[in-house]
Image (cartoon, rainbow, N blue to C red; front, side, top):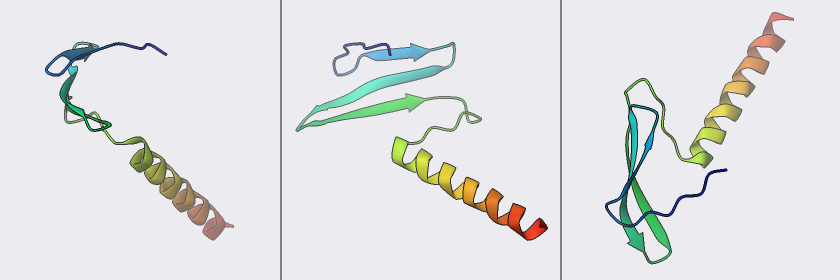
Length: 67
């Protein structure tokens, strides 16, 4: 894992086309702005995991229907 220190209004670049900007720091929170191509899906971890579980359940359900 790469750990970087950034301040408000500083950025991190990933590859050639993803930029993460620190928008706000305070009150135990950090707000990030993310610029990425439209074909790159960006989610919070809990949303990503929910979508992944939902997709897996759908695959398993369809697999069981085929049997």
